[in-house]
Image (cartoon, rainbow, N blue to C red; front, top):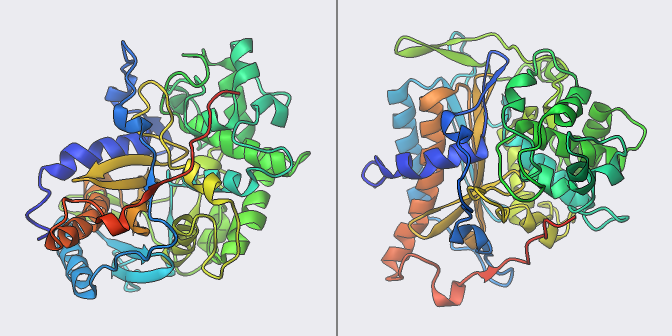
Length: 446
């Protein structure tokens, strides 16, 4: 089944998703923006599907369980694909609610050594970090006057932009959704190899504002990083940006979720013996590569998380349970969690929300965040109508890693599509399982 459905579909569907979710490609400390992102829309380009509410499975209904034999066949297919592509190693998890449907690892942590990839192997998470940062904001949404619409200057009075009116109006939501007016080329200016966290705000202060806040989507890792730092400052006023952010992450998410390997510290990640090496393409295969990430990553809230498959599963569980841990502890309100998945209502939004991007595969809605950083790749995705999600971590980047991530996303959706077809339904949940719209999306007005 898996070889026949997507040879062209994944190219036309999920390559745009990769660009939307991972707006920048990092290589040797440099930031490169795909050429198609440089184009500006000549007219309002909001798509009708951007305005549709994310549809979630009502809590009163059980998810349709994927057959174990189908999941086994899927993992075997992916292993064959990884072998064909010479991918060094990957780790895969498919969750349904808080139940594990599939946990599967393939290959080696480092191609020149014996230890295999296992569920506790630590990978660079890269661009999906932005979605984790927005979950931090969700844990605070509604507390003590904090909301997604909190003005940046209310959180940090020294926040500046080249246009003073925009600086007065920009809020946290617009920074997370990359609709604050920050130009994409700032990513090329701010190299994480040498930049400091405070440089994120210096770049925003000096760059021309390309549109009024909330008007235009423009891919910007700098914008996402600023949103994460401001969230940390809102929790820990008086601390420096990096300390405030990492402390808030640790106390509000990492420790409550039980993420024992998760860290933003390269030194701490490398201190553990079970860590995946980055790899670079050489001939028809891969060789281990050196890490270039600095000890303190200026863009940490957008690309800096490091974690294992098991820890990523704990994060994914909180998404699928709308803010609850597997043990039943509530970390955030359901409405605050789900609002992050909803695309921004802005020109050229490309279905992009607060660190998440939405696409459809034959009627199946997929909310995902994926990309590559320091020669490793990661994807986390949600099929909200089925309370199902996936994580895939790969210890290389490039077309081969993208192919694995795309196949996981589309293959998971295809299993549901096939299941529904067998039940003689028209490619969407049956009437008794029709998901309800999630709560209203947040206003982008300050």
